[in-house]
Image (tube, rainbow, N blue to C red; front, side, top):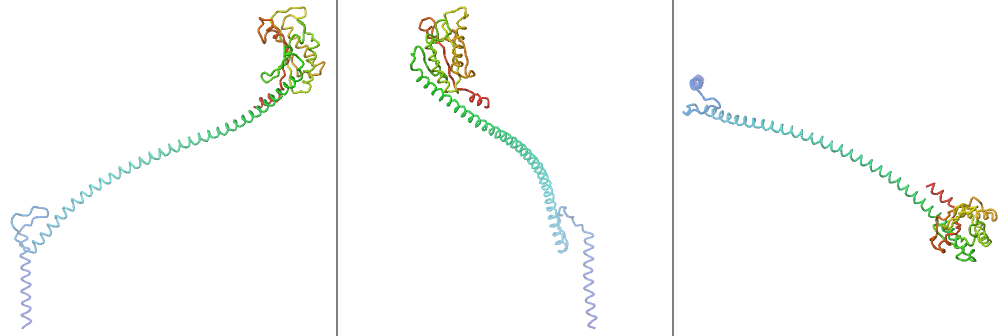
Length: 310
């Protein structure tokens, strides 16, 4: 009996829930509900509380979804913009990289060119420094030779001065010019007027000179005959030039034949009236011009050899 009553009560509860479900379904079938995103009806909805709660949750989800869609749209837009910016930055970077590479290549080429130029300049400097050193050494050698020549000249000048002290200054003089010793013998010491024959006193002077020259074999000898400007014409001599040359040759012959001076050391030259010491307008000047000069110079073989070498 008790069991029957319990079963009857359970049956009634089930029927009640079923009736409520049928009523809800029937109500929802007859009462329209606004869709997500549509305006909310002005009239109050008469729905069960649970249904209203579900609708409010749905509206909240719809709002959230709409916001999320806007955010997604904006994010996609921002992403597209960023991608475009990244693409542009990539192009700029590539361009800058290419420019930098190009500048680097240009700089490397310029640096290489400058390096080559510097090497050429350095090599050229080394060559020039060597050439300068060679020139300095050659110059020093020349200076030594010239100094030796000067020493010989000065020594010879002193020897001749001492040897020829017995002759008067208007008959014979010794001086140094241009690194050479000039022994100037006057016309009255050596020759008679218009003659190339050497007088006795002149032979004495030549003998003293020959003694000095034989002791100094490194001396070259140039004999120059000079006259004044008064014309001369004889059966033997055509003019002053002819006479001056004949007088120089006379002295050369005595030096070689009588005193054994090596002929290769001697040169005879006639200057005539064309190399005067003084004016030809006065007797004194003409007397100075009538002379024979014996020009003594150290041999230049060593000097010429150095000049040819350098």
